[in-house]
Length: 299
Ligand code: GUN
Image 1 (cartoon, helix red, strand yellow):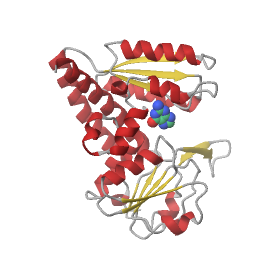
Image 2 (cartoon, helix red, strand yellow):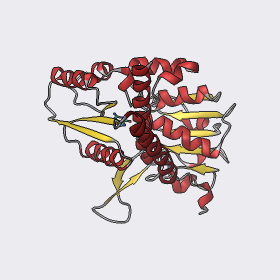
Image 3 (cartoon, helix red, strand yellow):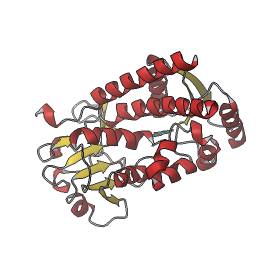
Image 4 (cartoon, protein in one colour):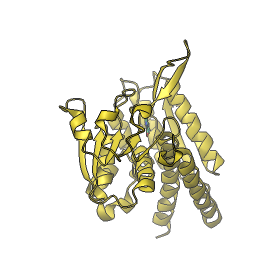
């Protein structure tokens, strides 16, 4: 297999982290403060614990401060809202990340919308979702959700000018599918979202210049779904039984990588594709939040 086709998320993410580290250093020198991310995790879901620990480790590596807030799965919505209020009012905290999903007794929307929009490093607050959707000048006031931003930055490596490209996004989640569509529309792509109720999905994906798969269904996208020369971004991170090692598991994407490889012009691997980019984008958003808050204070 030729490596030229592989969009290496690890390398692109390392470059973005290096750029962000420079911004962190500048910020510290200019304002004598350290950009700080507050991470809120409710419960003990092992995958969420891994994500959160990786985010904290990477943030510290580039010189940021991190405050971890790990709460019991039984915490009440009221207590969680109190914590968000405290973090909103803490001058030291620049970015707030509440790891999703939250337990079912908590209204996630109420929690996300309680975050101060200028500290919303995930870009999930309704105000930021609205600004992303309107686009244009408002993009300088919003935060773009980290996974779609990471996908977009990787896509630009393969297709610098996205104008007029037909992008098909598989999945309509608020975290990936919908914000991905907004981003690509802003780049003047023709955007189609397909989802679990779409008929003949593969006939639609087959027309795409770009396919972004974000459904959480292991190896769903096969070779006959993809047009020759398309660029494929695989957001899926699915743990499945290892095909050759009994009792072991492995990570696979939503795309059957080995099957589609011969038809694509470029593709992101799993692991080592979108995952590292999501974290790098979170760090970027947090430093950008710190800079924006500073501008607000000084103007
Ligand atoms: N859970 C899965 N992806 C994400 C994400 O990007 N941000 C948060 N907060 N939770 C998630």
